[in-house]
Length: 382
Image 1 (cartoon, helix red, strand yellow):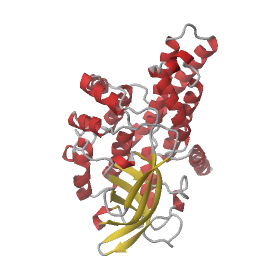
Image 2 (cartoon, rainbow, N blue to C red; image 1 turned 90 degrees about the vertical axis):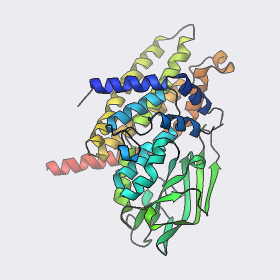
Image 3 (cartoon, rainbow, N blue to C red; image 1 turned 120 degrees about the vertical axis):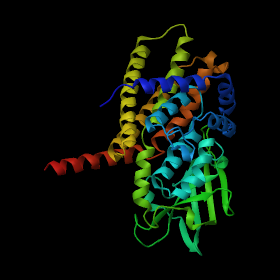
Image 4 (cartoon, rainbow, N blue to C red; image 1 turned 30 degrees about the vertical axis):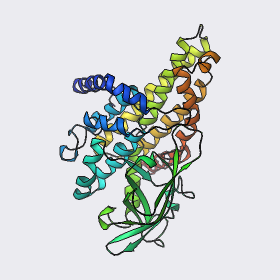
Protein backbone atom coordinates (compact mmCIF):
# COMPACT_ATOMS: atom_id res chain seq x y z
CA UNK A 1 0.00 0.00 0.00
CA UNK A 2 1.37 3.42 -1.02
CA UNK A 3 0.86 6.45 1.20
CA UNK A 4 2.93 9.14 -0.55
CA UNK A 5 3.40 10.83 -3.91
CA UNK A 6 6.42 10.78 -6.19
CA UNK A 7 8.51 13.87 -6.89
CA UNK A 8 7.07 14.04 -10.40
CA UNK A 9 3.53 13.93 -9.02
CA UNK A 10 4.36 16.66 -6.51
CA UNK A 11 5.79 18.88 -9.27
CA UNK A 12 2.74 18.25 -11.42
CA UNK A 13 0.44 19.10 -8.50
CA UNK A 14 2.32 22.35 -7.84
CA UNK A 15 1.96 23.39 -11.49
CA UNK A 16 -1.76 22.59 -11.59
CA UNK A 17 -2.29 24.43 -8.30
CA UNK A 18 -0.50 27.52 -9.56
CA UNK A 19 -2.60 27.60 -12.73
CA UNK A 20 -5.86 27.14 -10.85
CA UNK A 21 -4.97 29.92 -8.40
CA UNK A 22 -4.66 32.47 -11.23
CA UNK A 23 -6.96 35.48 -11.06
CA UNK A 24 -8.66 34.48 -14.32
CA UNK A 25 -9.61 31.01 -13.10
CA UNK A 26 -10.63 32.23 -9.63
CA UNK A 27 -12.96 34.84 -11.14
CA UNK A 28 -14.55 32.29 -13.49
CA UNK A 29 -14.96 29.78 -10.63
CA UNK A 30 -16.67 32.40 -8.49
CA UNK A 31 -19.17 33.16 -11.25
CA UNK A 32 -19.85 29.44 -11.70
CA UNK A 33 -20.58 28.75 -8.02
CA UNK A 34 -24.27 28.44 -7.19
CA UNK A 35 -26.08 29.22 -3.93
CA UNK A 36 -29.61 29.44 -2.58
CA UNK A 37 -30.97 27.13 -5.26
CA UNK A 38 -29.58 29.16 -8.18
CA UNK A 39 -27.53 27.01 -10.55
CA UNK A 40 -25.38 29.10 -12.92
CA UNK A 41 -24.11 27.92 -16.29
CA UNK A 42 -20.63 26.56 -15.59
CA UNK A 43 -19.67 25.89 -19.19
CA UNK A 44 -17.64 29.12 -19.64
CA UNK A 45 -15.44 28.08 -16.71
CA UNK A 46 -14.91 24.64 -18.23
CA UNK A 47 -14.07 26.08 -21.63
CA UNK A 48 -11.34 28.06 -19.88
CA UNK A 49 -10.08 24.93 -18.12
CA UNK A 50 -10.12 23.15 -21.48
CA UNK A 51 -7.98 25.91 -22.98
CA UNK A 52 -5.54 25.44 -20.12
CA UNK A 53 -5.38 21.71 -20.82
CA UNK A 54 -6.57 20.68 -17.36
CA UNK A 55 -9.73 18.70 -18.06
CA UNK A 56 -8.42 15.37 -19.34
CA UNK A 57 -4.67 15.24 -18.82
CA UNK A 58 -4.64 11.42 -18.79
CA UNK A 59 -6.31 10.95 -22.16
CA UNK A 60 -4.13 10.11 -25.18
CA UNK A 61 -2.93 13.15 -27.14
CA UNK A 62 -4.95 12.13 -30.21
CA UNK A 63 -8.12 12.38 -28.09
CA UNK A 64 -7.37 15.80 -26.62
CA UNK A 65 -5.33 14.84 -23.56
CA UNK A 66 -1.66 14.98 -22.64
CA UNK A 67 -1.04 11.27 -22.27
CA UNK A 68 -0.31 11.55 -18.56
CA UNK A 69 -1.09 8.78 -16.03
CA UNK A 70 -4.58 8.42 -14.58
CA UNK A 71 -3.10 9.30 -11.19
CA UNK A 72 -2.25 12.77 -12.52
CA UNK A 73 -5.90 13.20 -13.51
CA UNK A 74 -6.85 12.44 -9.90
CA UNK A 75 -4.37 15.08 -8.73
CA UNK A 76 -6.05 17.63 -11.02
CA UNK A 77 -9.46 16.60 -9.66
CA UNK A 78 -8.22 17.29 -6.13
CA UNK A 79 -6.78 20.67 -7.04
CA UNK A 80 -9.91 21.72 -8.95
CA UNK A 81 -12.06 21.32 -5.85
CA UNK A 82 -9.48 22.92 -3.57
CA UNK A 83 -9.38 25.94 -5.92
CA UNK A 84 -13.15 26.38 -5.58
CA UNK A 85 -14.10 24.92 -8.97
CA UNK A 86 -17.56 23.26 -8.92
CA UNK A 87 -16.72 19.74 -10.03
CA UNK A 88 -19.96 18.01 -11.11
CA UNK A 89 -19.47 18.71 -14.83
CA UNK A 90 -15.93 17.36 -14.57
CA UNK A 91 -17.02 14.24 -12.68
CA UNK A 92 -19.82 13.44 -15.14
CA UNK A 93 -18.15 14.46 -18.40
CA UNK A 94 -14.53 13.41 -17.90
CA UNK A 95 -14.35 11.02 -14.97
CA UNK A 96 -17.44 8.94 -15.81
CA UNK A 97 -18.65 9.25 -19.42
CA UNK A 98 -15.28 10.11 -20.94
CA UNK A 99 -13.50 7.38 -19.00
CA UNK A 100 -16.16 4.90 -20.06
CA UNK A 101 -15.67 5.90 -23.70
CA UNK A 102 -11.93 5.28 -23.32
CA UNK A 103 -12.67 1.86 -21.86
CA UNK A 104 -15.45 0.61 -24.13
CA UNK A 105 -15.82 2.98 -27.08
CA UNK A 106 -14.79 2.26 -30.63
CA UNK A 107 -11.97 4.25 -32.23
CA UNK A 108 -14.56 6.18 -34.23
CA UNK A 109 -16.59 7.01 -31.12
CA UNK A 110 -13.49 8.18 -29.27
CA UNK A 111 -12.39 10.43 -32.13
CA UNK A 112 -15.90 11.80 -32.53
CA UNK A 113 -16.51 12.74 -28.90
CA UNK A 114 -13.42 12.82 -26.70
CA UNK A 115 -11.53 15.84 -28.13
CA UNK A 116 -14.54 18.12 -27.69
CA UNK A 117 -15.06 16.87 -24.13
CA UNK A 118 -11.38 17.51 -23.35
CA UNK A 119 -11.60 21.07 -24.72
CA UNK A 120 -14.66 21.90 -22.63
CA UNK A 121 -16.71 22.39 -25.77
CA UNK A 122 -19.05 19.45 -25.15
CA UNK A 123 -20.46 17.98 -21.94
CA UNK A 124 -22.03 14.69 -20.89
CA UNK A 125 -24.33 13.18 -18.29
CA UNK A 126 -25.35 9.72 -17.15
CA UNK A 127 -28.83 8.37 -17.95
CA UNK A 128 -29.13 5.18 -15.90
CA UNK A 129 -31.62 5.73 -13.07
CA UNK A 130 -35.37 5.48 -13.72
CA UNK A 131 -38.43 6.14 -11.52
CA UNK A 132 -38.62 2.41 -10.72
CA UNK A 133 -34.96 1.49 -11.23
CA UNK A 134 -32.55 3.16 -8.84
CA UNK A 135 -30.06 1.00 -6.97
CA UNK A 136 -31.18 -2.05 -8.96
CA UNK A 137 -30.47 -1.09 -12.55
CA UNK A 138 -31.63 -4.55 -13.59
CA UNK A 139 -35.16 -3.17 -13.20
CA UNK A 140 -34.78 -0.54 -15.92
CA UNK A 141 -37.59 -0.30 -18.46
CA UNK A 142 -36.30 2.04 -21.16
CA UNK A 143 -36.30 0.24 -24.50
CA UNK A 144 -34.29 0.69 -27.68
CA UNK A 145 -36.22 -0.66 -30.65
CA UNK A 146 -34.47 -1.38 -33.95
CA UNK A 147 -35.11 1.24 -36.61
CA UNK A 148 -33.28 0.61 -39.87
CA UNK A 149 -29.55 0.74 -39.14
CA UNK A 150 -30.16 2.34 -35.75
CA UNK A 151 -32.58 2.41 -32.83
CA UNK A 152 -35.31 4.50 -31.24
CA UNK A 153 -35.13 4.85 -27.45
CA UNK A 154 -38.23 5.34 -25.32
CA UNK A 155 -38.26 5.69 -21.54
CA UNK A 156 -37.77 8.04 -18.60
CA UNK A 157 -34.53 8.74 -16.71
CA UNK A 158 -34.31 10.65 -13.43
CA UNK A 159 -31.87 12.24 -10.96
CA UNK A 160 -29.15 13.20 -13.42
CA UNK A 161 -27.17 16.39 -12.71
CA UNK A 162 -26.34 19.32 -15.02
CA UNK A 163 -28.42 17.63 -17.70
CA UNK A 164 -29.88 20.83 -19.18
CA UNK A 165 -26.32 21.97 -19.88
CA UNK A 166 -25.00 18.82 -21.57
CA UNK A 167 -24.78 17.62 -25.16
CA UNK A 168 -24.39 13.88 -24.67
CA UNK A 169 -26.09 11.26 -22.51
CA UNK A 170 -24.73 7.81 -21.64
CA UNK A 171 -27.98 5.85 -21.65
CA UNK A 172 -28.84 2.29 -20.61
CA UNK A 173 -31.80 0.69 -22.41
CA UNK A 174 -33.18 -2.76 -23.18
CA UNK A 175 -32.55 -4.01 -26.69
CA UNK A 176 -34.02 -7.47 -25.98
CA UNK A 177 -36.77 -6.85 -23.39
CA UNK A 178 -37.60 -10.50 -22.57
CA UNK A 179 -34.03 -11.77 -22.28
CA UNK A 180 -33.89 -11.67 -18.46
CA UNK A 181 -33.31 -9.10 -15.74
CA UNK A 182 -29.61 -8.59 -16.40
CA UNK A 183 -29.56 -9.66 -20.04
CA UNK A 184 -30.58 -7.77 -23.13
CA UNK A 185 -29.32 -4.37 -21.88
CA UNK A 186 -27.29 -2.12 -24.15
CA UNK A 187 -25.56 1.23 -23.74
CA UNK A 188 -25.95 4.17 -26.10
CA UNK A 189 -24.62 7.67 -26.62
CA UNK A 190 -27.68 9.91 -26.95
CA UNK A 191 -27.63 13.37 -28.54
CA UNK A 192 -29.42 15.46 -25.91
CA UNK A 193 -30.57 17.86 -28.61
CA UNK A 194 -32.24 15.12 -30.67
CA UNK A 195 -35.98 15.14 -31.40
CA UNK A 196 -37.93 13.45 -28.61
CA UNK A 197 -35.59 14.45 -25.73
CA UNK A 198 -37.31 16.52 -23.04
CA UNK A 199 -35.36 17.68 -19.97
CA UNK A 200 -37.12 19.08 -16.90
CA UNK A 201 -36.02 20.01 -13.38
CA UNK A 202 -37.02 17.84 -10.42
CA UNK A 203 -37.81 20.08 -7.42
CA UNK A 204 -35.33 19.58 -4.59
CA UNK A 205 -33.55 21.27 -1.69
CA UNK A 206 -30.02 21.23 -3.10
CA UNK A 207 -28.25 23.99 -4.99
CA UNK A 208 -27.57 21.55 -7.83
CA UNK A 209 -30.74 20.54 -9.63
CA UNK A 210 -31.74 16.99 -10.42
CA UNK A 211 -33.36 16.42 -13.80
CA UNK A 212 -35.93 14.18 -15.41
CA UNK A 213 -35.24 13.15 -19.00
CA UNK A 214 -38.15 11.86 -21.08
CA UNK A 215 -37.11 9.97 -24.20
CA UNK A 216 -39.88 9.66 -26.76
CA UNK A 217 -38.76 7.49 -29.66
CA UNK A 218 -35.39 9.25 -29.74
CA UNK A 219 -33.35 8.26 -32.81
CA UNK A 220 -29.80 6.95 -32.32
CA UNK A 221 -27.58 5.50 -35.01
CA UNK A 222 -25.94 2.09 -34.93
CA UNK A 223 -22.67 3.95 -34.43
CA UNK A 224 -23.98 5.26 -31.10
CA UNK A 225 -24.17 1.76 -29.59
CA UNK A 226 -21.39 1.36 -27.02
CA UNK A 227 -19.97 -2.14 -26.97
CA UNK A 228 -21.83 -5.22 -28.22
CA UNK A 229 -25.61 -5.25 -28.33
CA UNK A 230 -27.23 -6.89 -25.28
CA UNK A 231 -23.89 -6.94 -23.42
CA UNK A 232 -24.37 -3.73 -21.45
CA UNK A 233 -24.64 -5.28 -17.98
CA UNK A 234 -20.96 -6.31 -17.63
CA UNK A 235 -19.93 -2.91 -19.01
CA UNK A 236 -22.22 -1.16 -16.52
CA UNK A 237 -20.59 -2.98 -13.64
CA UNK A 238 -17.14 -1.98 -14.83
CA UNK A 239 -18.26 1.61 -15.37
CA UNK A 240 -19.81 1.84 -11.91
CA UNK A 241 -16.63 0.51 -10.29
CA UNK A 242 -14.61 3.19 -12.11
CA UNK A 243 -17.15 5.80 -10.97
CA UNK A 244 -16.89 4.70 -7.33
CA UNK A 245 -13.34 5.72 -6.47
CA UNK A 246 -14.71 7.73 -3.56
CA UNK A 247 -12.47 10.69 -4.44
CA UNK A 248 -15.30 13.07 -5.32
CA UNK A 249 -17.06 12.43 -2.00
CA UNK A 250 -13.74 12.65 -0.12
CA UNK A 251 -13.19 16.09 -1.61
CA UNK A 252 -16.67 17.19 -0.56
CA UNK A 253 -15.97 16.01 2.99
CA UNK A 254 -12.62 17.83 3.02
CA UNK A 255 -14.19 21.03 1.64
CA UNK A 256 -17.00 20.98 4.20
CA UNK A 257 -14.64 20.37 7.13
CA UNK A 258 -12.43 23.24 5.95
CA UNK A 259 -15.51 25.49 5.93
CA UNK A 260 -16.36 24.41 9.47
CA UNK A 261 -12.82 25.27 10.60
CA UNK A 262 -13.09 28.65 8.88
CA UNK A 263 -16.31 29.34 10.79
CA UNK A 264 -14.74 28.24 14.09
CA UNK A 265 -11.67 30.46 13.62
CA UNK A 266 -13.97 33.51 13.47
CA UNK A 267 -15.59 32.59 16.79
CA UNK A 268 -14.35 33.68 20.20
CA UNK A 269 -14.05 30.19 21.66
CA UNK A 270 -13.90 26.55 20.61
CA UNK A 271 -14.91 23.78 23.00
CA UNK A 272 -12.74 20.78 23.83
CA UNK A 273 -15.46 18.56 22.41
CA UNK A 274 -15.30 20.37 19.08
CA UNK A 275 -11.50 20.15 19.00
CA UNK A 276 -11.64 16.42 19.69
CA UNK A 277 -14.20 15.87 16.95
CA UNK A 278 -12.12 17.87 14.47
CA UNK A 279 -9.18 15.57 15.20
CA UNK A 280 -11.37 12.53 14.62
CA UNK A 281 -12.64 13.95 11.33
CA UNK A 282 -9.09 14.58 10.14
CA UNK A 283 -8.11 11.02 10.99
CA UNK A 284 -11.11 9.68 9.10
CA UNK A 285 -10.30 11.90 6.11
CA UNK A 286 -6.73 10.61 6.03
CA UNK A 287 -7.93 7.01 5.97
CA UNK A 288 -10.55 7.92 3.37
CA UNK A 289 -7.90 9.45 1.10
CA UNK A 290 -5.90 6.22 1.24
CA UNK A 291 -8.97 4.16 0.31
CA UNK A 292 -9.73 6.39 -2.68
CA UNK A 293 -6.15 6.37 -3.94
CA UNK A 294 -5.87 2.60 -3.67
CA UNK A 295 -8.83 2.33 -6.05
CA UNK A 296 -7.35 4.97 -8.37
CA UNK A 297 -3.93 3.34 -8.55
CA UNK A 298 -5.61 0.00 -9.18
CA UNK A 299 -7.59 1.41 -12.11
CA UNK A 300 -4.39 3.03 -13.42
CA UNK A 301 -2.89 -0.48 -13.49
CA UNK A 302 -5.98 -1.88 -15.29
CA UNK A 303 -7.17 -3.59 -12.11
CA UNK A 304 -10.81 -2.72 -11.46
CA UNK A 305 -11.72 -4.11 -8.03
CA UNK A 306 -15.47 -3.75 -7.45
CA UNK A 307 -15.18 -4.56 -3.74
CA UNK A 308 -12.46 -1.98 -3.06
CA UNK A 309 -14.47 0.59 -5.03
CA UNK A 310 -17.59 -0.20 -3.02
CA UNK A 311 -15.67 0.18 0.26
CA UNK A 312 -14.21 3.53 -0.86
CA UNK A 313 -17.56 4.86 -2.05
CA UNK A 314 -19.32 3.75 1.14
CA UNK A 315 -16.73 5.23 3.48
CA UNK A 316 -16.35 8.55 1.65
CA UNK A 317 -20.06 9.25 1.15
CA UNK A 318 -20.95 8.33 4.73
CA UNK A 319 -18.08 10.50 5.99
CA UNK A 320 -19.16 13.48 3.87
CA UNK A 321 -22.73 13.16 5.09
CA UNK A 322 -21.64 12.91 8.74
CA UNK A 323 -19.39 15.97 8.52
CA UNK A 324 -22.17 18.02 6.91
CA UNK A 325 -24.64 17.05 9.65
CA UNK A 326 -22.12 17.92 12.39
CA UNK A 327 -20.94 21.18 10.81
CA UNK A 328 -24.34 22.76 10.09
CA UNK A 329 -24.54 24.15 13.64
CA UNK A 330 -20.97 25.51 13.67
CA UNK A 331 -21.63 28.98 12.13
CA UNK A 332 -22.81 31.57 14.62
CA UNK A 333 -26.10 33.48 14.18
CA UNK A 334 -24.04 36.50 13.13
CA UNK A 335 -22.17 34.50 10.49
CA UNK A 336 -25.46 33.23 9.09
CA UNK A 337 -27.05 36.68 9.12
CA UNK A 338 -24.04 38.21 7.35
CA UNK A 339 -23.89 35.31 4.90
CA UNK A 340 -20.28 34.58 5.73
CA UNK A 341 -18.59 32.34 3.16
CA UNK A 342 -18.33 29.37 5.53
CA UNK A 343 -21.97 29.67 6.60
CA UNK A 344 -23.14 29.63 2.96
CA UNK A 345 -20.98 26.55 2.17
CA UNK A 346 -22.23 24.63 5.21
CA UNK A 347 -25.87 25.48 4.57
CA UNK A 348 -25.50 24.17 1.02
CA UNK A 349 -23.62 21.09 2.28
CA UNK A 350 -26.40 20.20 4.72
CA UNK A 351 -28.94 20.25 1.89
CA UNK A 352 -26.71 18.29 -0.49
CA UNK A 353 -25.47 15.68 1.99
CA UNK A 354 -28.51 13.33 2.03
CA UNK A 355 -27.89 12.50 -1.62
CA UNK A 356 -24.26 11.46 -1.13
CA UNK A 357 -25.23 8.04 0.22
CA UNK A 358 -27.75 7.53 -2.60
CA UNK A 359 -26.03 8.60 -5.81
CA UNK A 360 -23.58 6.26 -7.58
CA UNK A 361 -25.00 3.39 -5.53
CA UNK A 362 -26.66 3.51 -2.11
CA UNK A 363 -24.73 2.68 1.03
CA UNK A 364 -26.84 -0.47 1.38
CA UNK A 365 -25.80 -1.66 -2.06
CA UNK A 366 -22.14 -0.86 -1.32
CA UNK A 367 -22.36 -3.01 1.84
CA UNK A 368 -23.99 -5.78 -0.16
CA UNK A 369 -21.18 -5.74 -2.75
CA UNK A 370 -18.59 -5.72 0.01
CA UNK A 371 -20.20 -8.61 1.90
CA UNK A 372 -20.54 -10.66 -1.30
CA UNK A 373 -16.90 -10.02 -2.12
CA UNK A 374 -15.64 -11.16 1.28
CA UNK A 375 -17.99 -14.15 1.20
CA UNK A 376 -16.48 -15.15 -2.15
CA UNK A 377 -12.97 -14.85 -0.69
CA UNK A 378 -14.00 -17.02 2.26
CA UNK A 379 -15.40 -19.71 -0.03
CA UNK A 380 -12.19 -19.75 -2.07
CA UNK A 381 -10.13 -20.35 1.10
CA UNK A 382 -12.31 -23.33 1.98
